[in-house]
Length: 95
Image 1 (cartoon, rainbow, N blue to C red):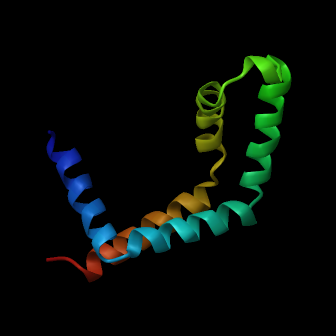
Image 2: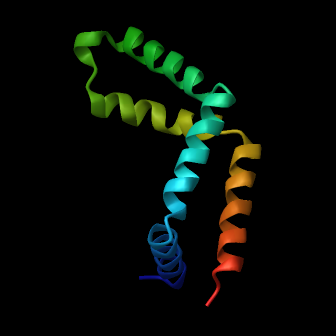
């Protein structure tokens, strides 16, 4: 396990233990709805299903087809806000 992945695991564990991970997930959910991300992704799902045909698409296909687009559509402002919140949390709870 690399030092980077070890650090991520420690940070993730701390976020979970303190309940901050759930708060961040709720914030992310709200921000994505607010900026129209959810509606954009829903429209993209409909396009993928229309192209492949309802009978020819599996949930796995749909997830694989929309994940890159979903990540790309997250506004930088939302990413920055989450990163700032995580940094503030870590600074506040540094051991």
